[in-house]
Length: 301
Image (tube, rainbow, N blue to C red; front, side, top):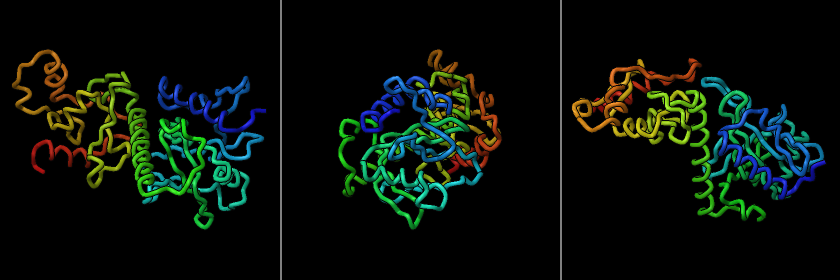
């Protein structure tokens, strides 16, 4: 039997970091292939809170992907102080899974948060500490740290100073952006919606409505997968996209002469339709958001 402890969890996080770097988000089947000291250890089961046999505290928690416009079975939430709040399983605080989740507070061991980016596909966040218990609300508070903090993971979680809470909030924002990025790329089959480029390292998840504005939620209908060139051109209003997915390039760009990148990268896409859109209707780019953004492209807002 695999013995739980910090060494195991560090090895698991190193394995997950390598897997994500090589493959991106991981399918459920891949999460059953981790091996430690010659023994295979699956990282997921039918419960949202998972502690393998013999483990005193939880190893992973999971937030399943919920399609747009559907209500998730458990509503996790973000706190104003930089922490995230994760719901117990069911309504019994003494359920074994809930006890093992709370046990992470006592041991100080980090766990892995598997966030769904599609059905059966997860992006792992780690290391994650359980720092507070709120039984009246049937939830615990989580501190999500960056992978770069691993060398000091052995320290006990402590009450967060205002400066530390700001750092945790910043880390959380970055991690949530990663989840948005992966959900959008998955919906667009890992291709630029304009030119079909498939090199993930050259692809971005672009907001239609910027996240700083009303309506700029980090949800797939407010996203487009764009290569670096087309993302920069979209943000600079050199090109716009109509509510019926037609691409428009600014007139002054069409009149310019500046080599093959301008010709093939921008001028030739003028008047064409998006080359790739999500297959699922609810994941397609929202026409109302596109219309609002297109008005900005036209200089009317």
